[in-house]
Length: 124
Image (cartoon, rainbow, N blue to C red; front, side, top):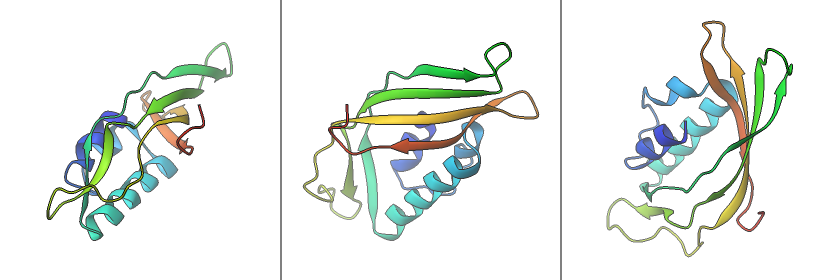
């Protein structure tokens, strides 16, 4: 999901068909809305986050249908820029931040992120 989001962020392509390949529900809505806001405001995102996700829990344990994934992502080199002149959009530095996600098994057997939360820089 994050790779698809990073790719779409390079041009703020809020309609990217790739977003729905690994995300659904609230996760997909939030990514699309964020990219639309960036598009509307003339922003793009450059670079990539550093991620090291781990499974925190599975429900039910025997045959999981829902997985909770946790990470301490680093957005130091994944920042927003003005599309018109390539300048940084703001003076807010990236950094390490807690990320939690819910990944659910879909009716077709695939797994998709259904919700996620990215906390403030400095939370991990």
